[in-house]
Image (tube, rainbow, N blue to C red; front, side, top):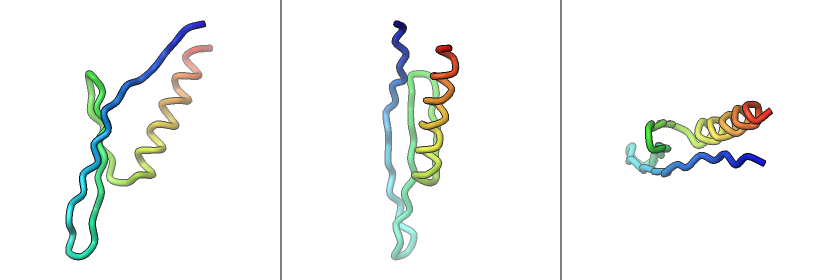
Length: 58
């Protein structure tokens, strides 16, 4: 059995846009940073990363 993992630091930044806050998200690994403008984009990235890892294990 092989263990593969990804470690990220998640930063959530709230910016004011008048009366409505806007959130942005950054995932940082040891070598790269990924920025997202919506929570849905962040979740899609994590799901795709999980699929790619599962495919590479086969």
